[in-house]
Length: 460
Ligand SMILES: Cc1ncc(COP(=O)(O)O)c(C=O)c1O
Image (cartoon, rainbow, N blue to C red; front, side, top):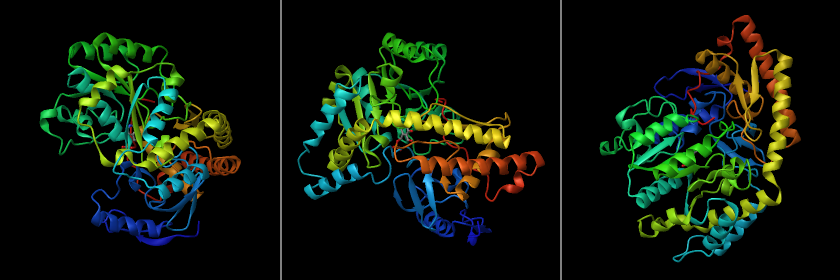
């Protein structure tokens, strides 16, 4: 690329001068760090998660499978709006429904009738759904589900696996041992600002280990309100595991909550619970349910949900008609276009072609995972080398117009053009990495700092 410009490093305290292809992004980010604690609203949008100084930080607009950054570069978005985009950006059907709603009004003094229409659709669609509440996002939805489970059971403790948002109930896990979230989120999280009295109320368990879960439930017998977990992410759970979790929850009177915020409707219209054939007591959805418009839902069995009528769970914007209308239109289009089948087919082809490119380049990397969420695995047991390779992959792919992690979050707007461009970019990237590996010059290829660890979930 010949569009290198001089920039100040994103880390204002370093004041280093580097070259960058994303000068406008980096200049904005330096200003953001002065005004916005942490720089971004979402950790997954922090430049340090990507190839900082090479990857884009600020988007100007998006359409279909692509977005354009403030420096004028075009990218295929392989992060799909951090999983929120399932149909593609600015989907004409969803946006038309939303625009029409805007003209009718979006936040009334009384409720919107769409609340009932959507509740009926969700109850028809999602196996565990007999009653429904709404929120504006995934973390909110998890907090509401946990409140309901605590209120319904009269118990305080929550067993969790994976990431479930930023709220006190979850971060309390790191009050008693500051490594509790290491394997579920990432290391080094201090539970600053979380009331110390919550210590011992959120207890992690590893994915796939029924014995461990059984022992933890035994240790806290009669005290566990809920077990909350992602049923899957990019791998199938071990045979019989989720059925075993459901059985243990029944035996211990704990509410089983599936967090389907990120897996969403990519694997099937009934969500992950339909795909794996295990019906939990409750489930939460957000992100892809409304194709990027802020929205979340909590669904569950009547016996668990009904007591929520007496609980104080209330917010002005949870009945805003934009989210409701977007969710109705998105779910309608996912079904009409049979999006899950399309994503399964597309992802399988992407995996095959990326693997062929890796073989041609002679690089030890494999594209695996479930077809609707392909993942790259660099085949080395050295974690530092893995981070170096994934940083270089993100860097080289960004220069070739592909944004994302070393994984592919699919949406229905990705088609043959995106496939061809991405496979060509991956082939060139793998060739660069292979040359660097064989000549021992990988580090010299870096045009940025090593990326910081992404969310690390036990749920694969
Ligand atoms: C499984 C899971 N739960 C909860 C959340 C939090 O959702 P939100 O960022 O909408 O608050 C996320 C976000 O990535 C998630 O992946």
